[in-house]
Amino acid sequence: MFRIAGRIAQMEESATLRMAHRARQMRQSGADVINLSLGEPDFDTPEFIVEAAIKSLRSGATKYTPVAGNQELREAIRDKFLRDNNISYSIDELMVSCGAKQCFANLCFALLEEGDEAVMLAPYWVSYFEIVKLTGAQPVVVQSSVENNYKPDLKDLRKALNSRTKLFVFSTPCNPTGTVFSEADLRAMAELFAEYPDVLVISDEIYEYIQFGTNHFSIASFPGMKERCATINGFSKGFAMTGWRLGYMGAPRPIIEACVKIQGQFTSGAASFSQEAATLALRSDLTETYKMRDAYELRRDHLLEQLKSIPAFRLNQPQGAFYVLPEVSDFFGKRYKDVQIKDAEDFALFLLAEAHVAVVNGIAFGAPQCIRISYSISEERITEAVERIRKALALLH
Image (cartoon, rainbow, N blue to C red):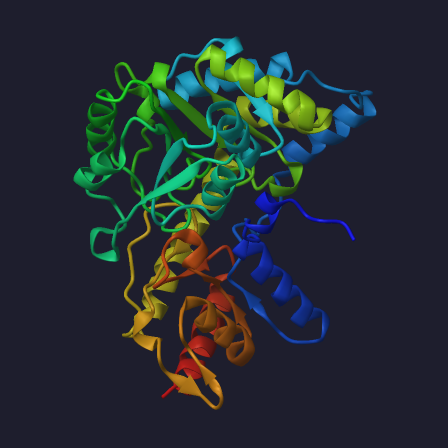
C-alpha cells in the first residue's frame, strides 16, 4: 500500500471545485442544478482571440516556449503595466505562468520556508491558505466583517506582522467578496508596509477589468512599493480565457529569477498558442472586456435586489469581480427533517439538495459564517436560483 505524504493529507480539497463536481454529478443524473459556485465567466473567449490562437497553431507555433514567457508577450505585459497600472517593469522583472495560481505558488515556494509566516486578509481566495501550508510555512489570517464591506482594520494587520512574516497577500477586486481597495486604502497599506521592508506584498489583480464605477489602483505604483511588491494578473477573468491557463506577474528581478527556476522544474513555459493569442488581447482595445464587465454589473444589481427578499442574509456591496458573500449564520441550528444546519458547509449542501442550487461554503475562504454566490450566469437564472433558495429556506425551522 502506498503512503501519501503527510503534507498532502493535511491539504484541503478546493471547496469551489468540490461543489462544482457535486453539481455536475447531479446534472448528469438529470437534475436541473443552477450552479452559482464557479468563479468562471459564462461568456466565450472573444472571437478575435480565438482566431489568433488558430492562426498561431496553423503557422507552426507548437513548440516549447521560454520558461519566463515569450518575449513578445512579456513586452505587451510590460506596456500594459505601464499604461494601466503606472508600474514600470523591465522585461526581466516579468514572467508568464500557467495561470495566476501558478504565479502565487511560484512566489510561495521561492520565499517561504518552515517556520515562516504568510499574512492574508480574510475572506481570502481558497488557494492562498493551502499553498502556503504546502510550503511548510504558517498562514496568518487577519479578519474583517461584512459591516466594513470586508475591509480590514490596519491596526489588526499591523498586529499580525512580525520578524517571521515573509509575505502578505491580498486581492483587489477581491475573490470572494468583490471588495475593491481604493487609492486611499492602498496608500495607507503602502505606508504601513514601508515599516516592514523584508515583507513581500503580493497583490492579486486578476479581476482588474471587472470593476463597477471605481478606478483600479495597484499598490506597486505607490512610491517605494514596486521594489517590495509582486503584482499578479492573468487572462482568465477579464478576457474569459479560463481554459487557456495563462497568468503573469511583475516582481523584483531576483524573485522572478527564483520563480523561473521553480517553474522550469514543474511546468516549463506556458502554451505557445495561448501566449500568442494573449499578446493580441493585450495589444487590442477592451471593447469586448467592457461588454462583459457591464453585464456583470447588471447581474450584481439584479442579484442584490433579489436577495433582499431573504432578510436573514446579511449582504455586502461588491464593487468588482462577480461574487457576493452574504453572512448566513442566522440559519445555523435550524433543521429540516433529519438534517440540521450546523455550519456554512451544511447550509450549502442543504441548498444543493433541496433547491438544486450550488453555492460555496465560506469556511474555505476564512469566512465560516458565509456562503459565496457567483453571478456569472444570466439574470433569468439568477431570479430562478434566488426563488429556489427562498422556498428551500422556508422549510427550515
